[in-house]
Image (cartoon, rainbow, N blue to C red; front, side, top):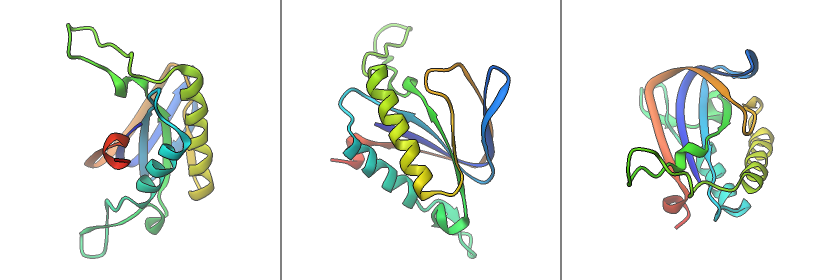
Amino acid sequence: MKFLIQRVQHAAVQVEDQVIGEIGYGFLVFVGISNTDTREIADKMIHKLLNLRIFSDENGKTNRNLSSIGGELLIISQFTLYADCRHGNRPSFTDAGKPELAKELYEYIIQKCQEAVPKAAHGEFGADMKISLLNDGPFTIMLDSDVICS
């Protein structure tokens, strides 16, 4: 499982020209799921995400997590995080999770995040989405379960 996290001033997701999710200050999280991922892996990744201290404290140090600043979440499914570009110029996505598994885990991640964060918006699995954001910093971090859960 991979989480690409961007600290944002604000972000929104549109499907068919309709905004279906938007947030203010917080994290835009692109979620990639592989065929070997489980709810247990998702739980570890969510715990790391929610406790990640990349917001500034009163001294300008990145020492605060999402809850300590009242931050918000926008969660977007992103199978392309598993793009394999080693051969040729056309990416392969064979490492991305099968749609049934990926959708179930994506919805599980949304549910768990909504239980922990007062405002946790999300995209639509499998839809053609348009994402707008104002990256803060910019600050972008990749969490990979192969590293986090090993």
